[in-house]
Amino acid sequence: MNITVAICTWNRSDLLKQTLEQAAQLSIPQGVSWELLVVNNNSTDATDEALASFASRLPLRSVFEAQAGLSHARNRAVREARGDYILWTDDDVLVNENWLAEYFKAFSRWPDAAVFGGMVEPWFAGTPPRWLPRAFSQVASAYATRDLGPQAIPLTQELIPYGANYAVRRAEQLRYPYDPGLGVRPGNSMGGEETTVVRAMLADGIKGWWVPDARVRHYIPEARQTTRYLRRYFYGYGEYCGRQVKGDGGQLLFGRPRWMWRQALESEIKYRLRRFLSRPEIWVSDLVAASEAWGQMRGYGLRHETAEAQEDEKEVRHKVVA
Image (tube, rainbow, N blue to C red; front, top):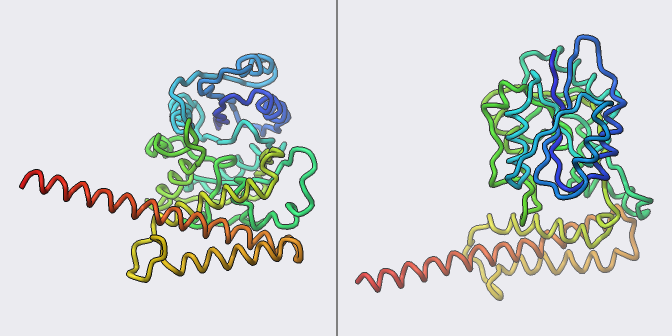
């Protein structure tokens, strides 16, 4: 069996070197031929030098993709890949020694499946604040970590892998390109391109499996080990949710439903009080709730302000035509 390990990278040469060092320790089963395909997505740092330093230690092949954006880089990797399966990981990840071997066993065990995913555990830079490991399960989504349990289970729309650790049979992957409108790119730090593809595959009846022993560790820099980072992340998620809320005809206060104000203020007060009086497992949940609530208010306002502006524009055009 031929396997392609694909990594898309942009200006992370130091982390990339650690990722490649770990990849050089992979245990490769008999009967497997593999390549490590790195897509340089228009990097301006020492990425080329980092790749050159591993040329003799890995079956390494690199290509340059000038169009900025992770989806463009992923699509380039799909076109370039020579393997029967593509194992996707990132340039800030440490793969377990048996990572590739566990996927190989899964491919053999479930030949009728085409998408697979494994565990993504945290790799903290330095020593994290004591509250973060204690409450980590409540904020894991903010760090792109994933744990669906120790047993192999079928993937579903709710139970899907994340971008740092998943695999797709190339024949199916060619039919499901990544949307350039999604994924990390200049001016956009939100992902979603890989989960959109996985969900589309599952919706079309393609089978998938969770492979619990195919493990990786995902880098979490010190700048993200803060309540400020969590505020920003969950505020952004709340803003997205707020844009989906339709007007319910209820009473408004400063352009937002009263229940939104009540929800935001109550959750903020709880967080402020419990931050110094309760365990992290409690106050971190309050922080998440408050951040999402304030973000939801902003998203609701932006959606309806845009809708009102569009209606005003239509009315002006109608009067001009009349």
